[in-house]
Image (cartoon, rainbow, N blue to C red; front, side, top):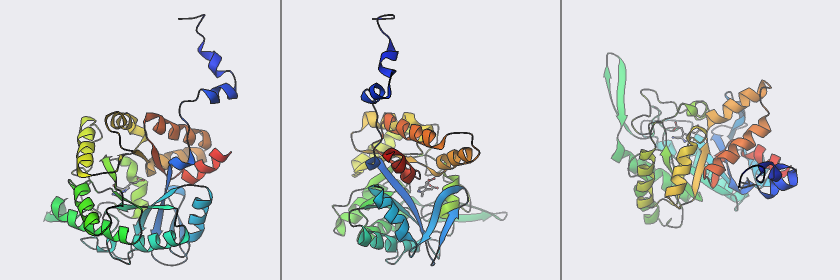
Length: 332
Ligand code: PBG
């Protein structure tokens, strides 16, 4: 059937009919709100490149968590800025580490709010890489790379300490080979066989993480992350990464970043049936905030359109710094 019998505009005439035929609907239950927790007391510092996102010390954290819980957001994702860093990131797996302490507090305040722990070492190492490194210096310039298998042991210790503190979900973001298997065995051996792994399966070496590295103080001190995070040009490799994670026991898959990778989200959705998470990363947040502050775009409309696009592409869950705003806007 074609024009004039077919008229697509018939289903667009009113808000009522547009609502009735809408294929993708955002829900507050889709969102995970990231939180940056830091050492010290009385800290609530806005992150320069991420207006509206703050560092909280443990004593200022409650008000933020109250707000998240009252908006009905089901989960938070914790990142920690430790007081001390060393070569192996030991503050990342300390029983009294900043993420572990924050987890205990949040679970005490809101037992039903899901705490997702990001399992990585880059916030805790003095070199800013996501695992242990081997380095050598040539003409005063440091070269080096992350050692895969030795790092797995440290990452597993980190995950186990996070689970012991009460984390509901372990989200390893380090991109070492075999990290899901290593962490799964570590969790199981320590009695946490019920704790799911949300794997950062498909994580690209992206310039969109720039503002996060300011927020988490985790920029690599030499080199970059291209030997462990994926080349942004690759799609088939994303399938291989996800495949490995499924075989190793991942419970959920993730694609990160989201906005420039909607084709990847769609591909992973079509090929795998695990719940799929999209990470709407820091640079995606900052770009929108900057343009909105200039009055160049309508922030609310743009954010809801972006998040809807991620869900339409196939994401079930979205990690976003806009979670609180979006939850408010969805309430109307
Ligand atoms: C840790 C980690 C990063 C992000 C989440 N976990 C940074 C990185 O890989 O450099 C980025 C999140 C964001 O940009 O919002 N490895």
